[in-house]
Image (cartoon, rainbow, N blue to C red; front, top):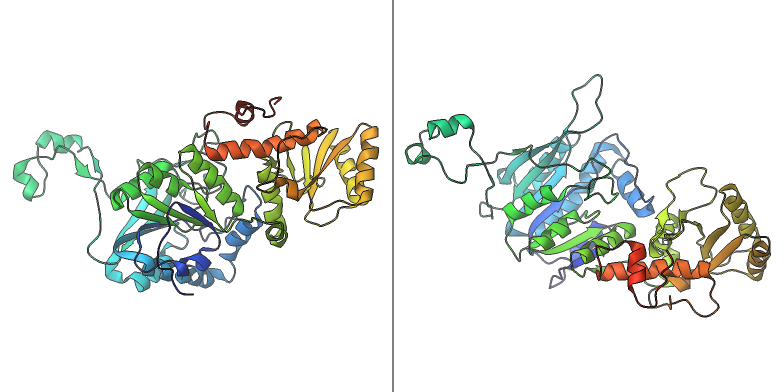
Length: 441
């Protein structure tokens, strides 16, 4: 694939980065930060159950460490090509694979171009009984040449140094005394917080989310305003959010449609419009999605929440955002009566009297069964996927049941939130804030 002749920023690509990086022009990016899933024995529980993300995580382990490193090398080779001669790359990893990745980076960038092995230290739960607690990550910092941007970060001098009024080493500061700004921080970071608490204000539910403070340090020390920052494993978008705040141009890539939609909303809250490329736009695009990707698209589209149960979920894939009513998603062209029968059973076992089934289409038997169930006090709204597409009329029409109107209001809330018109309001308040919107949250 030939590289494109220009570079668009302010965009999030929904794709495997190996498919997108070859399209970037040579030497066009100032700073690359990547935080790929670590090669460790721990299997992260991907919170959304996103099929693309699950495959993305699992692929790293297939074939062992040699496969993982080669998988990374293919991508790093493109990153080296697109990085400017004055650019920097930060690769975030853990001790399980850091030594393998460092050898690979030495080959791609040259052994003389490793600048730091930064040790990010933190605390938290999980105390083993036979080993010292593993409470640090490694961040490998590489350049393409000896000319690169760097602004040091300082910390206060120790009490002893301040008392002496000079450093112990006979250098240019020995006679001149101490600098007002302090001494530069070392390559071990203990002052940068890690997101650990479920109540952390930054927490978005992404399993490997990094703190904004960590990215602020990396971006502020290694780039200037208007520089281009790339995160090819963008996750929940911390890199691009911090880049936006620091007035850098940015590009994100992630394989997960769920993550990309989350990033769009996150950037909207900062007042930034994130363009996207690769998200499904047509019914045929949705038909081609893997099952969990399609399921996630639907649940996210109506601003619902996913069912965290992996087994024994009674066929309930998620819950609506207003009343928390069960949603079942079927990636089929025609739903028939037996599907309605099974969903009725699931609703009764879950103690609910209302619910939704969403699919591409429903036959006459399905409609008849929904009508019969309603006469018995069980309301099932059958929703065609076309109703949820961009450009569809999501305003409740005369005669529309309140159940359907409530679901459509979830789409309206998502659209309002994406515009960032009222980022501090709750979802229900967002809907109520729009004239003519559904307000009975």
